[in-house]
Length: 247
Ligand code: ADP
Ligand code: MG
Ligand code: MG
Image 1 (cartoon, protein in one colour):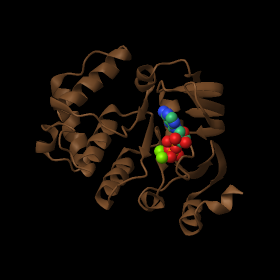
Image 2 (cartoon, protein in one colour):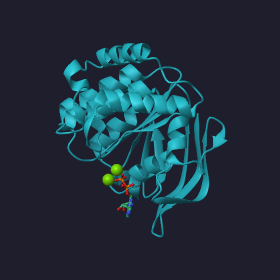
Image 3 (cartoon, helix red, strand yellow):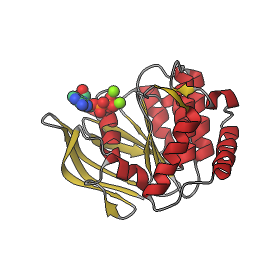
């Protein structure tokens, strides 16, 4: 599904951050990327999603058999790449439901499909929200307005479920995910996961991996993947930190 080959990227007119990343993700797999702060984890997720502050200087990103490095972020999203929002915007007056309806229909339109029938949309919202334990009153709240950390996570996971991407990239920032928010993300990923999609989970914290079983764990340091293992690597990192890998 995703093949990253010798990817080098730098900040627009700035420092080289990614220095030769190779990564292959197949349908049905969950990959975790861990690593010290400043390693380039968020840069990698941004570059896969196509954020414009970065410039690819070498390498390829192949998604479903096509090199996507020239595609705009919206095109990548329409092809089925989802990136969780690290800093979600507030949109007063637009409800969680209306925002996601618009997003679902925009994605359909970009893929040559008609708008979803209102009845069908409601049924899908009901099904997905029930699976995630989301209450009705949450769906009618203004997007992200006054949301707690946990509610922002709940909204992101709901968006992911509704958009049903092929590849979901979740970049969990190094700061302030409390245990409830962590459980929301983990439960959501576990509900979302199936044999046809894949998850790239970027995290500073081993504890998230207590709830999500990764097939592969990669350590990213100084712009390169320096080690790959299975979930026992995450436990080893929890016990020993990163320093033993860095020299
Ligand atoms: P991580 O997510 O692993 O903590 P990041 O990808 O956020 O690491 O950052 C990698 C390095 O690139 C850091 O030194 C960071 O300061 C720098 N960096 C990332 N994005 C930008 C940007 N838009 N402008 C300036 N520096 C950036
Ligand atoms: Mg960071
Ligand atoms: Mg980061």
